[in-house]
Amino acid sequence: MERRKFIVQTATPFLVFCAACSKSGVGTSPSNVDFTIDITSTIATPGSSVIRDGVIVVRVNAQNMVSSFIAVQVECTHAANPIVWNQSAQQFNCNLHGSVFSMTGAVINGPANRPLKSFNLSLTGNNLRVTG
Image (cartoon, rainbow, N blue to C red):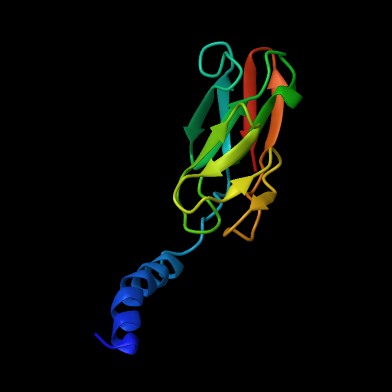
């Protein structure tokens, strides 16, 4: 087989995959979010998370303070794949293409080039309110 034909045949599936990836859109951040979570039953332990209304809410430590929780959009800003919380690394990972985000939603590693949207949190008793 000649070299040019070999390169075209082997590269085409990869290029199709990349084109499909770029056409899949970017993660959309939800708007008008306003819900409450009982932290003693839903996310009671460090590392636990819940997804609701397009938002992933994570408990990062055992303290009952607003700073013990994070709320960001659940869709990766690269290809709209759901992200997951990595408790040991204290970061969000997208398992589709390998994007990594900090606790604040900032991009640590691409291909994502936009941060995750963060949401406002307030804590009253055992109720964590997520808005934004």
